[in-house]
Image (cartoon, rainbow over all chains, first blue to last red; front, side, top):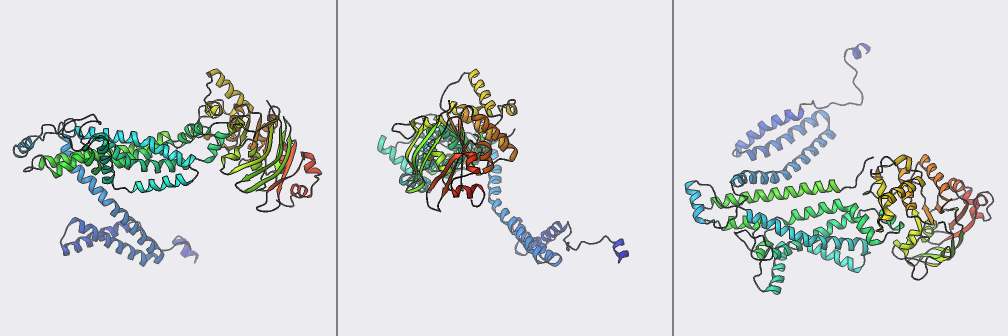
Amino acid sequence: MTTLTARSPRRSALTRNRLPRFAPWASLAVALIVGAALSTIVGFNAFGWGIFSALAFTFVFVAWSAAVEGSRKAKDKLATCLVVGAFLIALLPLVSVIWTVLVEGTKGLATPGFLGTSMNGVSGIQDNESATAGTRVLGGIYHSLMGTLLITLWATLISVPIGLLTAVYLVEYGNDGRISRAITFFVDVMTGIPSIVAGLFAAAFFATLFGPGTKTGFVAAVALSVLMIPVVVRSSEEMLKIVPNELREASYALGVRKWRTILKIVIPTAISGIASGVTLAIARVIGETAPILVTAGFATKINMNVFADWMSSLPTFIYTQILNPTSPSNPGPSLQRAWGAALVLIICVMILNLIARLVAKFFAPKTGR
Amino acid sequence: MSKRIDVKDLNVYYGNFRAVEGVNINIAARSVTAFIGPSGCGKSTFLRTLNRMHEVLPGARVEGQVLLDGDDLYGPGVDPVAVRSHVGMVFQRPNPFPTMSIRDNVLAGVKLNGKKLSKADSEALVESSLLGANLWNEVKDRLDKPGSGLSGGQQQRLCIARAIAVKPDVILMDEPCSALDPISTLAVEDLINELKEKYTVVIVTHNMQQAARVSDKTAFFNIAGTGKPGKLIEYADTTAIFNNPKEKATEDYVSGRFG
């Protein structure tokens, strides 16, 4: 007995057989080969190969584990495979969209003058020329980019005060009474309003006030703010609710009035959450197409005045370029511009999300010694 | 600066529920008074009626009189906000404002009320308040750092500095040491002893040794049972309460037989 333990180091009674470290990689290699074989039976393509390999990997890995490590470990590995698989499936469309827009959009974006010119004066003649003779695609998205930024800016200017004040009322003054419950209910209903209905509301509202066919950037901003207000109310309300009551009491106990407490203690404590909520609300409405189509029309020239004339925005620009190409016989240049605009739109949303994170970090209550 | 408090026939209600019944008590200026009693006996509720903080809760109201040097806190036309600038309060959990530096926390009561202070005046106020709260030497080099970076005991003393910066007549403390370790508790208790030279201090505590250590007079509150209102059972010099109480319930409580 003693000679035996001296030769091979003693095994702990608490350990069991385990798969070697290379087991996942070995299973993967086997799975890739099996997957390739299976997919050639039904006709080989990369997508099928991936699916079959994933299934084969799960089978090989779990079966191996069951044989060596026992059923509990095998169940654990099966669950890991399912979770990772679900994650990959969820990621697939996202990556695919970003990849497609990147591939298709970079050409449009890289065209000189794409960001700096409008579609004013660009007609089918120029597009046919660039399609046949290979000259560079004329026209750009400057008018739409400015339209998007201005309309969203105005929508934000309308929504943030209304939304924030509503949230302050709900949290600080509502006392969960009849009015505050009614407001909460209608805010929830508003969250579910289809965006086209918000657009029709704004169009009809301004048609009643200023005559039919009133289409300006401001009308679009009103339509967007109908969509934005409930989001701002909801996120600000949640942020104000998590401000500890102790801070309000501490302020009252110093003889500070309620409105000053809200203004100087409650809102500053919650400001990081409120600001990032607002930024995410902006990101939510910046890509809206339908309400802008019915409220701002589609312009091809630069219009910086939200109170007069039609205005273009990136989503409506993409929509019209795809649906009604500038040159119906050669839609290529229009398609290129549409993809370029889509890429710019995605970049805008991404920047807004980054800003939301930075804002949350920047305004967060400071800690440290 | 310091003022006396006289309470006459005070009942406190939450909606229809009577939480505290028939309290009569006279608290002398420049003294420390401790409220003791089992949980839920209404001592914190009663403490909050002394600066109308109970009104923060919806449905809370009182009957009776609370006289601060003869002025009724609940008289017609009295502004609860003005009351609170005369009667300051320190809470159970240290609650410095997380968005503010140590200096701004001390100045909060003055600044939030919109008063403008010159730089020299505000520096002097910060120093005197922090000195008054025995915190100056620990934080004088980092007044611009956030108040939430201090230890629990330091935070509580910061809250006391914040309370005395508005120059109140009375300071109420609602279990100020229950979230603190023994060393920090000692620091706060020493501070209470110094505070009574300038202020009337009323402290709620669950810790009977603490009541015995810091207070001049002690009030014992009790309830007959769940759902019944809390009552003031006995109010006397602290030595009398702990050594020869008149009431049986007080004796049972201070000797640890219940509660």
